[in-house]
Length: 157
Image (cartoon, rainbow, N blue to C red):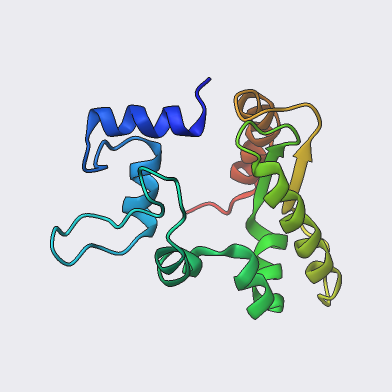
């Protein structure tokens, strides 16, 4: 297991311009705008100091903020969570994703409770004792039977 500075250092060793294709570079490529001069994705934080670039986050990354989408359009987004989203996260996530998922789960539950038909197959849940590294087999044990059931119930084409 690496610390975040170690992980970023490894990525910089692979590609000093932050184009390694590894995790942090991939997030920048996916969520950030492009630098006008180089055409490369803008970094979400300073590679030397770790200081977050609030401009990049607020301008580029914020459009992917699921909690903000839920606040802006609770009826529509809560219905999507009710009908389609199955999200599991370990309550001991190695990257502390459990903190955000816990807040999201509460917001989704509150928004769903205000829907005319709040019940559905979707869920946002924390799995006790699971970490970022142990959640996948746990999730697969739950998702595979759900997927088999959905396929079996799908209409013939």
